[in-house]
Image 1 (cartoon, rainbow, N blue to C red):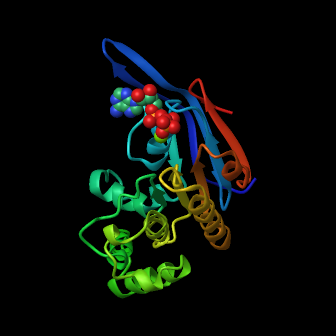
Image 2 (tube, rainbow, N blue to C red):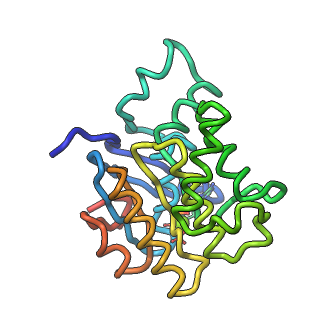
Length: 227
Ligand SMILES: Nc1ncnc2c1ncn2[C@@H]1O[C@H](COP(=O)(O)OP(=O)(O)OP(=O)(O)O)[C@@H](O)[C@H]1O
Ligand SMILES: [Mg+2]
Protein backbone atom coordinates (compact mmCIF):
# COMPACT_ATOMS: atom_id res chain seq x y z
CA UNK A 1 0.00 0.00 0.00
CA UNK A 2 1.21 3.51 -0.82
CA UNK A 3 2.27 5.74 2.09
CA UNK A 4 -0.80 6.94 4.00
CA UNK A 5 -1.59 10.64 3.81
CA UNK A 6 -3.87 10.28 6.80
CA UNK A 7 -3.78 7.74 9.57
CA UNK A 8 -6.33 7.73 12.39
CA UNK A 9 -5.89 5.22 15.19
CA UNK A 10 -8.26 4.02 17.85
CA UNK A 11 -10.44 7.12 17.94
CA UNK A 12 -12.80 7.46 20.88
CA UNK A 13 -15.33 10.25 21.23
CA UNK A 14 -18.25 10.59 23.64
CA UNK A 15 -20.75 13.37 24.16
CA UNK A 16 -22.60 14.30 27.33
CA UNK A 17 -26.24 13.29 26.99
CA UNK A 18 -28.15 14.50 30.04
CA UNK A 19 -26.30 12.92 32.96
CA UNK A 20 -24.98 10.07 30.82
CA UNK A 21 -22.14 9.80 28.34
CA UNK A 22 -23.01 8.84 24.78
CA UNK A 23 -20.06 6.90 23.34
CA UNK A 24 -20.16 7.67 19.61
CA UNK A 25 -16.73 6.46 18.46
CA UNK A 26 -15.28 3.45 20.27
CA UNK A 27 -11.94 2.77 18.63
CA UNK A 28 -12.39 3.76 14.98
CA UNK A 29 -9.24 3.49 12.85
CA UNK A 30 -8.63 4.52 9.24
CA UNK A 31 -5.71 4.81 6.85
CA UNK A 32 -6.05 6.66 3.58
CA UNK A 33 -3.33 6.16 0.97
CA UNK A 34 -2.26 8.75 -1.60
CA UNK A 35 -4.95 9.12 -4.22
CA UNK A 36 -7.23 6.54 -2.60
CA UNK A 37 -11.01 6.96 -2.44
CA UNK A 38 -12.84 5.58 0.60
CA UNK A 39 -16.58 5.69 1.26
CA UNK A 40 -18.14 5.64 4.72
CA UNK A 41 -21.76 4.64 5.23
CA UNK A 42 -23.69 4.12 8.43
CA UNK A 43 -27.04 4.84 10.00
CA UNK A 44 -28.06 8.34 10.92
CA UNK A 45 -26.48 9.09 14.29
CA UNK A 46 -23.76 6.44 13.84
CA UNK A 47 -21.08 9.13 14.18
CA UNK A 48 -19.98 9.75 10.59
CA UNK A 49 -19.89 13.54 10.89
CA UNK A 50 -18.24 13.22 14.30
CA UNK A 51 -15.55 11.05 12.71
CA UNK A 52 -15.05 13.37 9.74
CA UNK A 53 -14.66 16.37 12.06
CA UNK A 54 -11.89 14.52 13.91
CA UNK A 55 -10.18 13.54 10.64
CA UNK A 56 -10.38 17.17 9.52
CA UNK A 57 -8.88 18.43 12.77
CA UNK A 58 -12.02 20.49 13.45
CA UNK A 59 -12.54 18.64 16.72
CA UNK A 60 -10.30 16.60 19.03
CA UNK A 61 -10.83 12.96 20.02
CA UNK A 62 -11.12 11.96 23.68
CA UNK A 63 -8.36 9.47 22.93
CA UNK A 64 -6.62 8.10 19.86
CA UNK A 65 -4.53 9.90 17.26
CA UNK A 66 -4.94 11.52 13.86
CA UNK A 67 -1.68 11.76 11.96
CA UNK A 68 -1.33 13.84 8.83
CA UNK A 69 1.65 13.17 6.63
CA UNK A 70 3.49 16.45 6.22
CA UNK A 71 1.71 18.37 8.96
CA UNK A 72 4.62 18.30 11.39
CA UNK A 73 6.92 19.65 8.66
CA UNK A 74 4.66 22.66 8.22
CA UNK A 75 4.60 23.53 11.90
CA UNK A 76 7.36 25.11 13.90
CA UNK A 77 7.75 23.43 17.29
CA UNK A 78 5.11 24.51 19.75
CA UNK A 79 2.88 26.07 17.10
CA UNK A 80 -0.83 25.59 17.61
CA UNK A 81 -4.06 27.51 17.18
CA UNK A 82 -4.26 29.59 14.01
CA UNK A 83 -0.96 28.41 12.53
CA UNK A 84 -1.97 24.78 12.98
CA UNK A 85 -5.35 25.50 11.38
CA UNK A 86 -3.70 27.19 8.39
CA UNK A 87 -1.24 24.30 7.96
CA UNK A 88 -4.12 21.82 8.08
CA UNK A 89 -6.09 23.91 5.60
CA UNK A 90 -3.57 23.19 2.87
CA UNK A 91 -3.62 19.44 3.62
CA UNK A 92 -7.33 18.79 3.32
CA UNK A 93 -10.33 20.31 1.60
CA UNK A 94 -13.73 19.85 3.23
CA UNK A 95 -17.12 19.64 1.52
CA UNK A 96 -20.29 19.76 3.61
CA UNK A 97 -23.89 18.84 2.89
CA UNK A 98 -25.02 22.44 3.28
CA UNK A 99 -22.18 24.01 1.25
CA UNK A 100 -21.24 26.75 3.77
CA UNK A 101 -20.28 29.27 1.12
CA UNK A 102 -19.81 32.85 2.30
CA UNK A 103 -23.10 34.49 1.25
CA UNK A 104 -21.81 38.05 0.79
CA UNK A 105 -19.13 37.30 -1.81
CA UNK A 106 -19.41 35.79 -5.29
CA UNK A 107 -18.43 32.31 -6.41
CA UNK A 108 -15.00 33.38 -7.63
CA UNK A 109 -14.22 35.19 -4.37
CA UNK A 110 -15.34 32.19 -2.30
CA UNK A 111 -12.86 29.95 -4.10
CA UNK A 112 -10.08 32.57 -4.24
CA UNK A 113 -10.37 33.31 -0.54
CA UNK A 114 -9.88 29.64 0.35
CA UNK A 115 -6.68 29.68 -1.72
CA UNK A 116 -5.45 32.83 0.01
CA UNK A 117 -6.13 31.30 3.46
CA UNK A 118 -3.95 28.34 2.43
CA UNK A 119 -1.13 30.78 1.61
CA UNK A 120 -1.39 31.00 -2.18
CA UNK A 121 -0.19 34.34 -3.59
CA UNK A 122 -3.10 36.59 -4.67
CA UNK A 123 -2.67 36.17 -8.41
CA UNK A 124 -2.19 32.44 -8.23
CA UNK A 125 -5.26 32.03 -6.01
CA UNK A 126 -7.32 34.00 -8.54
CA UNK A 127 -5.97 32.06 -11.52
CA UNK A 128 -6.55 28.70 -9.87
CA UNK A 129 -10.04 29.73 -8.77
CA UNK A 130 -10.98 30.65 -12.35
CA UNK A 131 -9.49 27.45 -13.69
CA UNK A 132 -11.33 25.26 -11.19
CA UNK A 133 -14.64 27.05 -11.65
CA UNK A 134 -14.26 26.43 -15.37
CA UNK A 135 -13.46 22.78 -14.69
CA UNK A 136 -16.68 22.37 -12.67
CA UNK A 137 -18.63 24.05 -15.48
CA UNK A 138 -19.23 27.44 -13.85
CA UNK A 139 -17.27 29.86 -16.04
CA UNK A 140 -20.49 31.76 -16.66
CA UNK A 141 -21.37 31.97 -12.96
CA UNK A 142 -18.20 33.34 -11.34
CA UNK A 143 -19.86 36.64 -10.40
CA UNK A 144 -22.97 35.05 -8.90
CA UNK A 145 -23.52 35.24 -5.18
CA UNK A 146 -24.30 31.87 -3.56
CA UNK A 147 -28.00 32.85 -3.33
CA UNK A 148 -27.97 33.32 -7.11
CA UNK A 149 -26.83 29.74 -7.71
CA UNK A 150 -28.75 26.46 -7.77
CA UNK A 151 -27.97 23.79 -5.15
CA UNK A 152 -25.90 21.75 -7.58
CA UNK A 153 -23.99 24.88 -8.66
CA UNK A 154 -23.30 25.81 -5.03
CA UNK A 155 -21.91 22.38 -4.36
CA UNK A 156 -19.70 22.65 -7.47
CA UNK A 157 -18.35 25.95 -6.09
CA UNK A 158 -17.68 24.14 -2.81
CA UNK A 159 -15.80 21.41 -4.71
CA UNK A 160 -13.67 24.05 -6.46
CA UNK A 161 -13.04 25.71 -3.09
CA UNK A 162 -11.95 22.42 -1.52
CA UNK A 163 -9.50 21.75 -4.36
CA UNK A 164 -8.06 25.23 -4.89
CA UNK A 165 -4.92 24.74 -2.81
CA UNK A 166 -4.36 21.25 -4.28
CA UNK A 167 -4.64 19.39 -0.95
CA UNK A 168 -3.72 15.70 -0.92
CA UNK A 169 -7.11 14.78 0.59
CA UNK A 170 -10.74 15.83 0.35
CA UNK A 171 -13.17 15.05 3.17
CA UNK A 172 -16.78 15.14 2.01
CA UNK A 173 -19.72 14.80 4.41
CA UNK A 174 -22.86 13.84 2.47
CA UNK A 175 -22.05 16.27 -0.35
CA UNK A 176 -25.20 15.25 -2.22
CA UNK A 177 -27.54 15.26 0.79
CA UNK A 178 -29.28 18.49 -0.29
CA UNK A 179 -29.39 17.72 -4.01
CA UNK A 180 -31.91 15.89 -6.17
CA UNK A 181 -30.87 12.45 -7.37
CA UNK A 182 -29.78 13.43 -10.86
CA UNK A 183 -27.78 16.47 -9.67
CA UNK A 184 -26.28 14.41 -6.85
CA UNK A 185 -25.08 11.74 -9.26
CA UNK A 186 -23.44 14.39 -11.45
CA UNK A 187 -21.75 16.06 -8.46
CA UNK A 188 -20.29 12.78 -7.16
CA UNK A 189 -19.10 11.84 -10.64
CA UNK A 190 -17.38 15.23 -10.97
CA UNK A 191 -15.80 14.96 -7.52
CA UNK A 192 -14.46 11.46 -8.20
CA UNK A 193 -13.09 12.48 -11.61
CA UNK A 194 -11.34 15.56 -10.23
CA UNK A 195 -9.79 13.55 -7.39
CA UNK A 196 -8.66 10.83 -9.81
CA UNK A 197 -7.08 13.37 -12.20
CA UNK A 198 -5.16 15.03 -9.39
CA UNK A 199 -4.29 11.93 -7.37
CA UNK A 200 -6.25 13.48 -4.52
CA UNK A 201 -7.46 11.14 -1.80
CA UNK A 202 -11.17 11.22 -0.97
CA UNK A 203 -13.16 10.23 2.10
CA UNK A 204 -16.81 10.28 1.05
CA UNK A 205 -19.52 10.00 3.70
CA UNK A 206 -22.72 9.04 1.93
CA UNK A 207 -26.06 7.31 2.42
CA UNK A 208 -26.17 6.47 -1.28
CA UNK A 209 -24.97 2.87 -1.98
CA UNK A 210 -24.32 3.64 -5.66
CA UNK A 211 -22.06 6.57 -4.76
CA UNK A 212 -20.25 4.47 -2.14
CA UNK A 213 -19.66 1.73 -4.71
CA UNK A 214 -17.77 4.15 -6.95
CA UNK A 215 -15.03 4.48 -4.31
CA UNK A 216 -12.03 2.14 -4.31
CA UNK A 217 -12.77 1.04 -0.73
CA UNK A 218 -16.10 0.89 1.10
CA UNK A 219 -16.38 1.10 4.87
CA UNK A 220 -19.29 1.16 7.30
CA UNK A 221 -19.39 2.88 10.68
CA UNK A 222 -21.29 0.73 13.16
CA UNK A 223 -21.18 0.59 16.96
CA UNK A 224 -18.44 3.21 16.93
CA UNK A 225 -16.12 1.13 14.77
CA UNK A 226 -15.18 1.27 11.08
CA UNK A 227 -15.19 -1.99 9.17
N1 LIG B 1 -21.85 18.31 19.98
C1 LIG B 1 -22.60 17.26 20.33
N2 LIG B 1 -23.12 17.15 21.57
C2 LIG B 1 -23.87 16.09 21.94
N3 LIG B 1 -24.14 15.06 21.12
C3 LIG B 1 -23.67 15.11 19.88
C4 LIG B 1 -22.87 16.20 19.40
N4 LIG B 1 -22.55 15.96 18.12
C5 LIG B 1 -23.10 14.78 17.80
N5 LIG B 1 -23.77 14.26 18.85
C6 LIG B 1 -24.48 12.97 18.87
O1 LIG B 1 -23.58 11.99 18.39
C7 LIG B 1 -24.24 11.07 17.55
C8 LIG B 1 -23.52 11.00 16.20
O2 LIG B 1 -23.75 12.21 15.49
P1 LIG B 1 -23.21 12.44 14.02
O3 LIG B 1 -23.64 13.78 13.60
O4 LIG B 1 -21.76 12.15 13.99
O5 LIG B 1 -24.00 11.30 13.21
P2 LIG B 1 -24.00 10.96 11.66
O6 LIG B 1 -23.59 9.54 11.49
O7 LIG B 1 -23.23 11.98 10.92
O8 LIG B 1 -25.57 11.07 11.29
P3 LIG B 1 -26.29 11.61 9.94
O9 LIG B 1 -26.21 10.48 8.96
O10 LIG B 1 -27.69 11.86 10.40
O11 LIG B 1 -25.58 12.84 9.50
C9 LIG B 1 -25.68 11.51 17.46
O12 LIG B 1 -26.45 10.69 18.30
C10 LIG B 1 -25.66 12.94 17.93
O13 LIG B 1 -26.84 13.26 18.59
MG1 LIG C 1 -23.73 13.48 9.54
